[in-house]
Amino acid sequence: MTSQFSRRQVAFTTLLIREIRRFLRIWPQTLLPPAITMTLYFIIFGNLIGSRIGEMGGFSYMEYIAPGIIMMSVINNAYANVASSFYSAKFQSHIEELLVAPVPNYLILAGYVAGGTARGLCVGLIVTIVSLFFTSIEIQHLFITISMVVLSAIMFALGGFINAIYARSFDEISIIPTFILTPMTYLGGVFYSISLLPEFWQNVSLLNPILYMVNAFRFGMLGVSDIAVEIAFSIILVCITALTSFALYLLNKGTGIRN
Amino acid sequence: MKALSIQNLTKTYSNGFAALKEIDLHVEEGDFFALLGPNGAGKSTTIGIITSLVTKTSGSVKVFDTDIDADSELAKSYIGLVPQEFNFNGFEQVKHILVTQAGYYGMPAKVAEPRADELLHQLGLWEKRHTAARALSGGMKRRLMIARALVHKPKLLILDEPTAGVDIELRRSMWTFLENINQQGTTIILTTHYLEEAENLCRNIAIIDKGKIIENTDMKSLLNRLDKETFVLYLQDPIPSDFVLENISHQLIDNTTLEVEINRDDGLNHLFSLLSKQNIEVCSMKNKANRLEELFLSLVEKSEATL
Image (cartoon, rainbow over the protein chains, first blue to last red):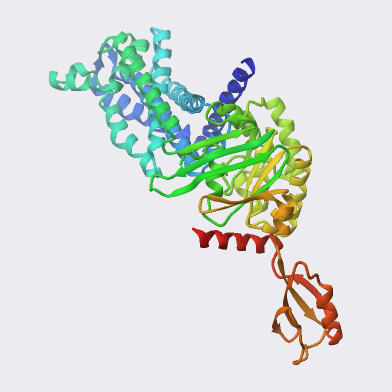
């Protein structure tokens, strides 16, 4: 029993290290672009436009958008890492290295999701450091901040995994980020408080899970939020459970990976 | 103990194509076993099912008495696979590929690294250990696949056409390497299109065609069934136009090359005495085809005639 546990532990660590090594090896594609893009967000939205907007939620506009921008980069990178890594493994057939090995499906999922989470957090840290050049950050609730960013990264890494399972071409791993994830992020309260919206659009916004993540993360950092943090945690945990179950179902069925 | 035991294995793909039709196959521990068949016969599907890359429709597969459905982790831990196509990440370094694969089998890095080094030396890849796999030559890529399959010390090694596209010198060195690891106790299952390879290396053989096992026996008995052999004789001088070879089926390819078909029971002495009487001198001779090749073709032809 112990040997099986330690064997699985080694397999998981191996997969995680491989994933981390992959995104570090191609850092100009994985770590550098978000740092540059988010710097531009801070300059354009935070500095140039933000100075004319004034305060939001009792904070300068730059302070207000910083948590949302950090969360946006974490979400996008956690998703993109798993989607591209797992799809590449399918495309080059080296996923077979894992499929023939005694690695249970849940460990394959855990390894890829942990790799995506690692990249999301790594990029989140880089963007946080960048943000310090534009604004000061004082974290109000450390536990909420850290747990929310980790859970959000896990949730979107799971989404990237499911996307990669179904994808049959590289185009199909960019469709969801472009047409679904990005609009949801922009409409998820990164740049504004939903209290500014008419009531109808406030209610529509409540259907967007990213709104809860951004606001709970903002609450952790600044202490202000448009929604109750408990609801945000509940929604994320439900989403993670549902996505994990679905991803495992697809893996056990062999969808997209076994004949 | 049986290294592999397959019973009533069936695979029907979603498009209705029946790749395997209730096949039975047994491989003893320590054997060097050939699984032969024409393209599309079902060899790779069989291997895919044994190694969990393909889902079976019905039947059972046991590896060292462990059912692949009941305890897939244990069954998988016994197997090393060298697939037909290159399937490693070309961007990864050679040594990383080996250490990572060992990790998937639960070997921690401190154990996997010396094991990888040992295989890199044995397979002549040591100098390339820090090279990205995509930069290797075709032969080196094949050797990397063998090293990767062996890194966790499997009890059963399955090689799906391991020497395809490999030059003859490298092919022979791979044969020696495989013979050595078989002598050390690893059971080997080999599929190949080079029938000379199967004849030289394997002790037992199964021939599969159109999803059915049409022959499963030991190599000696199979070769003993060959009742006729065709030889090509290269002659010293142009053959006289009035030469006679009574009761021997023959054909003149050109005036110094003669093809003869000899019954196994007759032997070659009678042929040579006939030639000698007519002052026809033979410089050299060869089998027209590899012996196993002749049998293989006749068995597959027979199978096609009955299907």
